[in-house]
Length: 251
Image: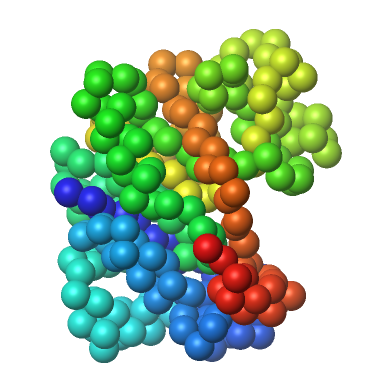
């Protein structure tokens, strides 16, 4: 089964004042809510089950999905109205809503891209068929940011760094970022069912990068680069106009 989770629970503080009256997921770009764009992209790629986590103006998202008959998909709600759980905690809470034998694609609601979501699933499936160990596939790119994931020559995750502060996090003592391939995380990744039990070892609230850094010494978390990737984080008011243009020209 092709299944995915859309992170839609965030407060969207960078999109104020729009998010004073609606969730970030329902902010419109190109005449449609951000949530619509992600759902349509997943549906076109053959994803059948989608879990959407909700917190800020949660009922608006629930009502929107109901009004659109869940877009003909099996869409389920992971309710975080009692408290935000961050990215890792959100996945942990949502896992029981998924088929436990299939991987889960994770997608932020405010990311627009030309990423081939069908290819990401096929890559993971083909690796499993050949017994290759891919416990998670992280879409990454060579772009400027403050925080980078650190990979070895085979694009296996080894750590994380903040180039502004010089902080390095890794289970490998003395890891030198200069000896690693430094790539930026996109917020799109696929998690194998092999690692679902490891979420039980994490607290209820945590970031997914904490999970990847905790277990990267014993699991194969693989970076995935798509040639010609175009990606836009629609997280701030000044990116909304860019998003309108992005939708016109993305391919």
